[in-house]
Amino acid sequence: MVNQQIAQTFYRIADLLEIMGENPFRVRAYRNAARTIESLGRNLREMVEKEEDLTSLPGIGKDLADKIREIVQTGSLAKLKELERQVPPGLVELLKVEGLGPKRIKTLHDKLGITNLEELKEAAAKGEISRLPGFGKKLEGLILKGVVLAKKEGRRFKWSLAESYVTDILRHLERAPGLENLQVAGSFRRKKETVGDLDILVTAREPSLVIEHFVKFPGIRNIISKGQTRSTVILASDLQVDLRAVDSDCYGSALHYFTGSKAHNIAIRAMAQKKGLKINEYGIFRKDKRIAGREENDVFRAVNLPFIEPELRENRGEIEAAARGQLPHLIEPGHILGDLHMHTTWSDGKYSIEAMAEAAKALGYSYIAITDHSKRMAITKGLDEKRLMEQCEEIERIRQKVEGITILKGIEVDILEDGSLDLPDSALSALDMVIAAVHSKFKLSRTEQTERILRALDNPHVNILAHPTGRLIGEREGYQADMEKIMQRAKDNGCFLELNAQPARLDLNDVNLKLAKDMGLKVAISTDSHNTDSLLFMRYGINQARRGWIEPQDVINTKPLDRLLKLFRR
Ligand code: DGT
Ligand code: CA
Ligand code: CA
Image (cartoon, rainbow, N blue to C red):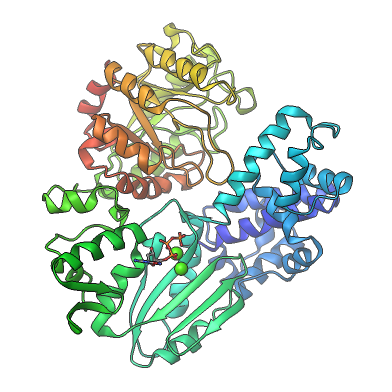
C-alpha cells in the first residue's frame, strides 16, 4: 500500500508549491499524478521492484517516475523536504482549516503576513480577513470555526493511511533479530477512524537489538529517543511511532494497557482495585506479587469479564455489557453479501457497469446496486430521467451476460434544497432501490437541514440515506442536522442509513452507529466506489461498524437477496 503514501506526498508537494505561488501547471501535474496513483490497481512498489516503465501510467512523466522510485526506495522524497524547509511550517498547518486552500493561504500570507493558526485566528476575530478581496464575512466566520477545529484535531492520520505505514514498518520489524511477539496497539488496534500516533509492542530475546533494527527503518525522519527497551521516532510523513519492548511475562497486560483506550483502562483498573488487585502495563498484582499478565485475556479474567474486542474498548458501556454477558457479536467482512452504492462511467465512475459487476463477483458478492448520480450533480454527468431509463435497459442486457451476481438498478438521487428529489417518482419507481443524498446547501440551519432530510425520507421510493452527516474526516465537519430525529424517521418509514466506507467519510461515525443500533435502525455498509479497486474499502466500513457495536443482523447487506428486496419494499 505504498501507493497511498506516494499520493499523499504528491498532494503535499502540490499544496506547498501552490502556497509558494509556483506555476499552476506544475501544481496540477502533481495533483493529477496523485489522483492517478490513488485509484491505481497496481502496487507501485512491485512495479518499481520489477523495473517496469512507470511513464506508461497516465500523468506520470520521467520526473514523477523518478520521484516515485525515490519514495519506494528511500521511504521519503528530497524534493518534499526541500519545500518544507522553504515554507513556514505554521503556514502548512493552515491547510487543515476548512475553507482554506493553498491559494487563499498565499493571499493571507502576502496581504496580512499570517504565518500560523494563532495569527489567522486573531485576524479573523478582528475582521481583517473579510476585508480581503474574495473573502467576505461568511468565509471569515467559517475560518474562525475552522481554526478551532484544526487545533482540536491536531495532526491525526486517517486509519487507512496509518495502515499503509503499519504495513511497511511491520515488514521491516519482522526481520529484526530475535524478535518474538509483535503487535500494533493503541488507537490503531481499536480501529479508530483517525490515529494520533502508532504504539508498537514487541517481545524479543534481546530487546536492544530490535530497537537498533527499528531505528534503521528507511521512512524515519527523526529519532526522538532510543533506549534499551523503547524508542520514539517521527516518520517523514510526520507520523510518530512509539516502540516498546516488554518481558514475555507481562506481554498480555502491556498489550491491554497500550491498546487502551485510556478511559477503558481506568475503568478496568478500578474494578481490579475493588478485588484487591493492581493492574498496569507490568502485570496483574496481588500485594506486590505478579500473579498473571502473559496473555491479554489474563487482564479480563482477573476482573471476571469475558474478552472484550479492542474496537469496543472506549468505556462506552462495554464493561457493563461484558459483565452482563451481553457483548455484541461484531460483524466481520465475511458477513457482507453485496455492495449497495457504486458509480460507473454513466456518471463519475471510472469503470463500466459490467466491470464493476465482474469485480464484485470476484469478491464473492451475490449482489450489487448500481447507483450513479442524478442530474443535479452536473459535473458528474448525473443522470436525467431519459438516461436513467437507458441505463436500466443496459443493466438488463448485462444481467444476461454476467452470471452469478445480481445487479440491482439504483440511483444516488440528490436531495434538493427543499427536500424534494432530483428525479420524479415515475423514474424512481422503475428502480430496485433508491439512495438519497445531500450534496449541496451544507450551510442551512439545523432546523432547515433536518426538515429537508426528513422530507426526503418521506418520499416512499427512498430506501437509504447516503453518508448521512456529510462530514469529511479532518476536512469538513458535515452539515448541522438532528441525527436522532432523522434516524427515528428512517426507522418509522422503513428506510435505512448508510455507513459509507470511503476512508475519508466513514459516515456514520461510531457514536451514531451505536445510536442507530440502540434504536433498532438497520444500516447499509457501502463503498460508494468510483472504481473497481475501492470495492475493497468495505473493510474500513466493517472496522467502523465494529466500533459502533454493529452485529451482522443490524446490516441489510448481510441479508440474502430475497430478504433484502423485501426490505426495499417500504
Ligand atoms: P491516539 O494515539 O491519540 O490515536 O490514541 P491512543 O489511544 O493510541 O493513545 P496514546 O498513543 O496516547 O496511548 C496509547 C495507549 O496507552 C492508550 O490508548 C492507553 C494507554 N495510556 C496512555 N496514557 C495512559 C494513562 O495515563 N493511563 C492509562 N490507564 N492508560 C494510558
Ligand atoms: Ca497512539
Ligand atoms: Ca503513543
